[in-house]
Image (cartoon, rainbow, N blue to C red; front, side, top):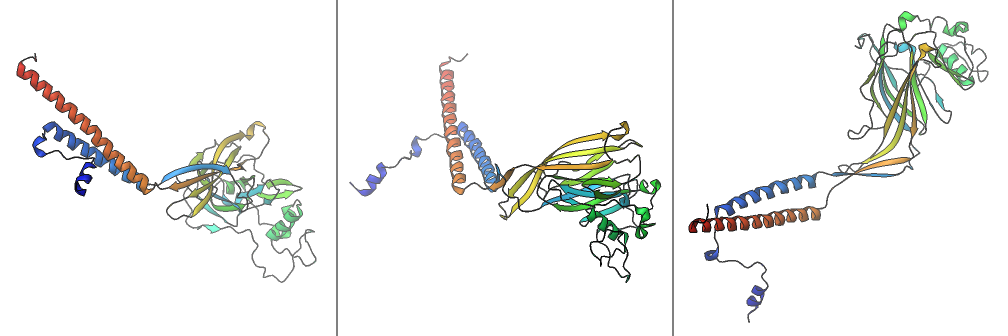
Length: 372
């Protein structure tokens, strides 16, 4: 026996002679339909193979070393920029008064349009260079014999370090500097943009009217108005980079309106969940944070304790969510394609046999006249 004859016995796909094969219209229809289905399914499989899948994991967060970045963009519609203070503090007692070294204030009119004659300026809480050769008094708050306070800001900083109360009208450097009226405060709006970097622990930050300072661990705002309307819009608030599919910015676009001549205290309680996003495209991990929010507003006209302002309190979750993009292997893609082709052709063959047998049985009944 020849070697070729031995190989022919191993053929699992014997070919039928053309003289014994019958081509039908029904078989052609099944072939066209099955081929179309295979083409569509393989195209979908190719699209799925090229699109990365997003896997989600949850584990204990151990990344406590870096700072927490707070990105904010808030518009206060009825309070001028000179009357707004942004303060931040954390649970360790680290208080950052008048945090504005990375924050921009943009003056607006009451319709929300920017005032063209005043461009956006970065507000820096650092005193300008002292060109005066005289040494101004710090009114007892100096930390050494050579400490000079030549500007009102110098005196404020010295009193803030000592945590003393300060009477502005008795400070020579501050006379006439902070004379403001109610009419000035409520003739404009203000948009506050920028970012803060605070310690990575539970804390809070707030927007409130008046200059802020601390006295014996008490946080105080120097503001004498009785009714403060704090209608505001949170244009953007996030704790890290923005990810479209995640809850990194659930408060964006929120607008809160207040009735005329009504002071209210707005509290936002935020639960922050650290998030790690690993993109397959560049491989660079993105550390950011998602958060949920609970809102509460208190009417201060009903003898409720509190002060008008917009307060954000946040807590960090001990767990981290990890999103990772993954691509399917080529072997998995090839296996799925073979399954599609084999499965569709098998089912199509069964349907073709059923159609042919049904048609032949119908024809035989017609020939013998048994079909009524």
